[in-house]
Image (cartoon, rainbow, N blue to C red; front, side):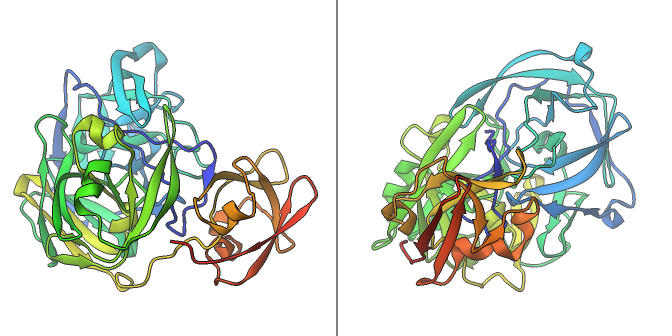
Length: 404
């Protein structure tokens, strides 16, 4: 599965626009040989969370430094065709990958070496696909999606609270927490587990650190497990093959293993969506995991979650209903409305997809908007009136309200 945004997603607040980079592709001819250094446990890899809640870090391919996303929703790791580490003369066709909205063509390129922290791989190769510079929901390009083929035989210790991860020998238990089952499916070749929603167990669900949203379920899974009295709105996701609109709900109880999660955003895909296509009940993404320290060890059959200090904090909900992306060019920077959520104040006020905003309460949109306090207006206190300056020169007032 690949989800690619058409603009920079403002997702630092974990709202409803989803960014995920995941691929279900053909198996390569040679997986290469993966080894761990004797001091792998000391080799933490620092990362930052992209505006799309993805784990972005530095590594090397054939001795060249590259920027990568740690993405357990990828069956075979993918490098961007435009990356400086790609030699176009060595890329050959390798069929297609299943993506949000359809299938996309991919290639394959043999590699000599690949290094992440204390892990080295010699031989093997990488799938090759078009990964636009905005694939992570920011203006920074990404070279590579590191997936199950490289991490799956090790234990992956992701310390979200301290923004670091490491690859260590399977079977290690470096911390204690709630334990859930974890396997790599023989057909899909993806990390898979289960969740309990509305008292119903849903399985399998893909463990997808490349998905910036929290929980995603298929339409049939939602019909089975939807808690009573939960209202829904709409959200948009952007796939390599096009955008999709999903329902969105906040549910009071999602359980993963022995962990009882508090309110969680749940995205409901339409019938025939990506989950249906690959035959799973749904996905768990970084929007959920980022409140925990997470150990993924499919060879040992377990996933471990230890809550961080903010694990029980209430989630942020949109009170505007405008899902926006930042477009730094042309100057000045502007926000483009990517989706107007159903039943929201924005929908009632007549906002439309494609509307462009150049200021918020008189403050111009700057290129660092996603990380600035100004971005919090869309989840502001109900009743607050926000004045949004359109790039056409007019100003529209929007009264924030709770609507889902």
